[in-house]
Amino acid sequence: MDVIKRNNVNVIGNGQKTLMLAHGFGCDQNMWRFLTPLISEDYKLVLFDYIGCGKSDYSCYDKTLYSNLEGYAEDVIDICQELELSNVTLVGHSVSSIIGTYASIKAPQYFSDLVMVCPSPCFLNIPPDYVGGFEREDLEELLNLMDKNYIGWANYLAPLVMGQDNSSSLIKELEDSFCSTDPTFAKPFANATFFADDRCILPKINIPTLILQSLDDNLASVEVGKYIHEHIQTSTLEIIDAHGHCLHMTNPKQIADIINKFLN
Image 1 (cartoon, rainbow, N blue to C red):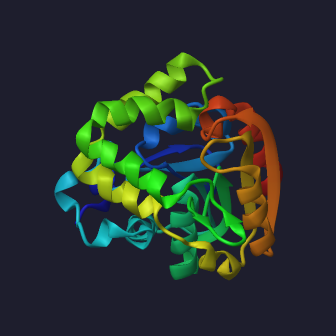
Image 2: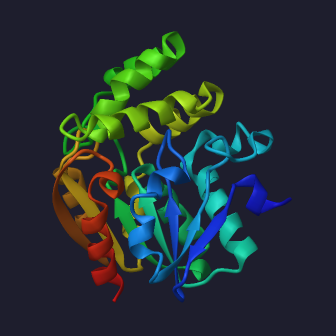
């Protein structure tokens, strides 16, 4: 199996230290292009697409494996193994923060640090003391819209995720990315992303972890960031004065500076 081709792996950059950039739901590695020019001189960057996303090999998709986030973590581990990586900083956007966590716990020999960009371990409100931001019925309705009107779903979700105050071009780009993802693969990824409760893995993290949370994020609130910080002993929380769930696209310079400070 050619993992490099399967996951459309690309390695760029000039540094000794390796950063692995893991994209979020409905996206692909292209979404990192605002950040990569700012860090490629100082780091080796590993970019890839999960199976079922971007330019990956869709014929390798396994419905059972990718029914949960641990299946996606296998992609990350396979790439690390294929490239013989070590001391990797896994930079995960949104759900990839949790996918990266699973990978780092299952295969700790590859990872030295985690950077979580707008993470959430659970998008559901779970009484009495956890507010993920969404009631189950609301998420079920949103995912049902994928089946009924996929374009309408993308049109609704993109501004919600990107943040209505950000540029229309960024919102349109995210909308196009959602639209270009085959629902056959997007729907199971959405289920694994939005209905999972992965809070239990947070205390198992024992490597330095940087949490980057947006001040105004419709999907992952500051309170969620604080919850993650409280449950990872080795974590640092940075709250960014920004709008939206895609800090690597809206605030790349700020994110690059904070990552550099964290790693140096």
